[in-house]
Structures are given as structure tokens and as C-alpha cells.
Length: 229
Image 1 (cartoon, one colour):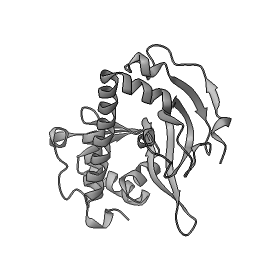
Image 2: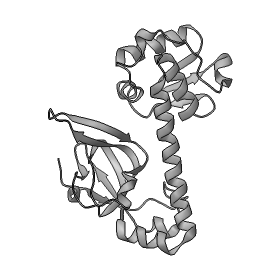
Image 3: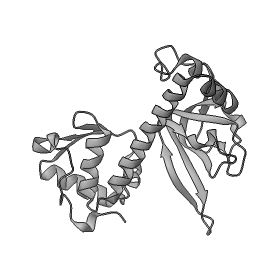
Image 4: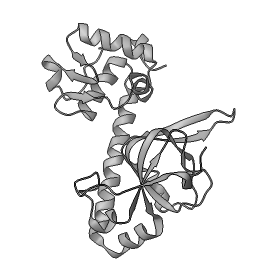
């Protein structure tokens, strides 16, 4: 794993960039970095010195199993990474770039000072964390669904917009996020298309017909055999 200090510093984004809606007192603290696949942000057991936010790419939170295998605890493609490290004494896992990524680094001490000095900034931070908690809860709810088709429809409804979801990852990677084998995902997508529930056009998945207006995934879209493996 590459040392985080080897990451290449990038010039800041323009004013209309990914941090445009951030409070200026926080955004100005950020330093933008480029990481290549395999580069590390931090290691388990180290004392946190920074808070990280992913602009693009993928950062994986990993931990070694008792058998020596790397277990991926979370994949972050946009948002804060290990946000609890702002108040933690040690990192509890490793953070590694799963693909070329752009990441913002904020000095932990400076962020804490800014949040302590402004109720408005502290409320903004709490709002950001609430958004990520909501996303985590949706992922857990999705993984609790037994049918592969139900998980696909749930993802489109909750992660997409207007009944349409654009995949930012490969279908194999998306299958892993859904807790499915790639084969189960492919079979279920084909079944949903034949049933007129989902239309697939390249990286876009769109709900069609009555499914587009549904608020909950319809039960029984895929047999139990296509559930998570």
C-alpha cells in the first residue's frame, strides 16, 4: 500500500466545484489530492490527523480477516470517509483507493476548531452526517430484502432520481453493493426487462409503467434463488 504522503496535490476546484455548497470557513481548509488504485489514505491503529471527503473514484474501508483476507467494510464514492475519526483516538480500519480517486483532506484540528467556534458550522456538519446515516440505513434496508429484483428496484427508487438511476460503477461492482453475485444481478435485470418493470440503456436503469410511481419495491420480482449469495 502506498503511503498517503505520496498522493499528488491538485489545484483547488473552481468556485462552482464539488464544495461550492459548503460553508467557506470549512471549504477553505481543504487540500485536494489525486490517488491511484492501491494508494492508502490511512492505516488501522494510526492516530487520526485529517478528515477526508471523496469527490470522485472509490475509497474502500478495509480490515484484515483472521484468515488474512481483506474484507471491504464500506465503499465510498462521494462523501466523508470514516467521519467518526473526527473524535476517535485511533483509526479502526484501513482506507485504500479502489480505483483512481480525487479526495479532499481537512486537518482534523482545524475542523474541530471551526466547529467549536460556530453553531452554524456545527449544525451544517450534523446535517452532512445525517445525510450519510440516511444513506447507510437505506443500504441496510435494501440488503434485508430477499429478492434480487426487489433490491434492484429499491436501489433505483432510493438512489436514483425520477425513477432513473445512473450506475457510477461496473455492474459487477454494483452486484457486490447489492449483496448479489454478478450472475444473479444479470438474470434479475433480464427478468425485470422482460416483465416491463425496468428498462436498461447502457449505464441507465429506469423504472417503467406503474413501477415508476411506486414508493416501495414490489414483492416477488425475482425468485428466492436470485437472492444474495
